[in-house]
Amino acid sequence: MEKGNTEESAENNTLRYKLTELRRLVRSYGSAAVAFSGGADSALLLKTAYEELGRNAVAVTAESCFMPATDIKEAVAFCKNLGIRHEIIKTDPLSMPEIADNTPERCYLCKKLVFSAFLDFARNNNIHIVCDGSNADDTADYRPGMKALKELGVRSPLLDCGLHKVEIRQLLHESGLTVWEKPSAACLASRVPYNEKITREKLAMAERGEAFLHDLGLSCVRVRVHSGAGYLMARIEIMPSEMPFLLEKRAEIYAQFKKTGFSYTSLDIAGYRTGSLNEVLRDVN
Image (tube, rainbow, N blue to C red):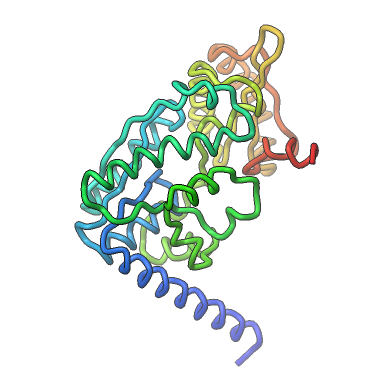
């Protein structure tokens, strides 16, 4: 057997082992409430939980100003398509001044709020475990929310089994679920730089801006909202390969973003990347 084929076979065996371990771990829960955002990670976890636990697996989704309306709709459709019980739990993170102030600990505080609500739901419904879709790649970036999950006793079976994002997408692709190719997402609060106050207006502007760019045909998009003295500026992150297309459409985009409420619209030439606002923290440290 050629070296390339041998390596490919070894990787496949490793992935099958991880999947087997994931099934075993989830099955051991007996019942589980799966925090479901509609993205690839939580989709694989929810699908696996439903296959192993049946009606004892429930999807729970937090509805708030931090989550785009399209993500809620897609999460609902996913669960309906597979016949999985799905509960929408409303939260209001901006009711907590500590979250609205948007310090680097904002994600920790928000996760504490949201997953406390999930735990209350689980207790009231005699569900043993609350779990989330954190994966092995999430340990490589600044993720204060993971500290909150650990404190609350929330399980992260994908992480525990060492599953990486690329492996998760492969397993979803093999299962025939189109969510495998869905771009990585993050709550809308991640569009506002640390220590700049989060408002419903900023979140809505980022959501509308991203929806407009997606409608133009752009794939991976982030619209970061930067505050100035009496103005708001949009910093657009997209894939470098799509920048020529965006520049062709710049007049249309500028006009739409102006209508949305942005005084200025800029293109980040470094391109799309997750956690770009954490770069400032790394620079400081």
